[in-house]
Image 1 (tube, one colour):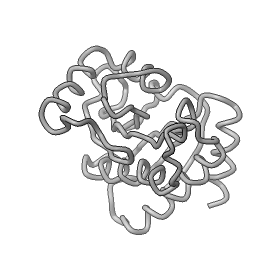
Image 2 (cartoon, one colour):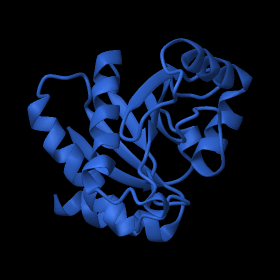
Image 3 (cartoon, rainbow, N blue to C red):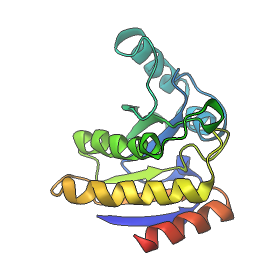
Length: 175
């Protein structure tokens, strides 16, 4: 599996699945979550409401992941994951790593070959982007051999800021 870091807007990525740094309600928010909901169109919110109504009445737990169609996005699927919130005392790196590995499990289950991730929990959830980058790259590198033969061929970290891109580039190349 290839691992890369690029600068840009995750909503424009030509990949099979993008990962949304969602909140547990799945009903949209700010940052990456808001941008993905805006770009995907109103059917994404409806799909998330249906998930809440049927299989996730209490919301998506931290470290979990679930997929919806991508609707108006270039990607076929959106995989929603909830990162740990340092401001709420969620400081266990294993919770953060789970966002990446569980999302990859969902992607493989969908047959996705290419997956794009944002810097989950690095924004308003208060994690240092360098820590997120190390945890993310490490989790992906550990997931790959355990899932040899899965459909996932490329994991792309898509970062909006130069500082985030630098942190993820360093982490991706040091694994």
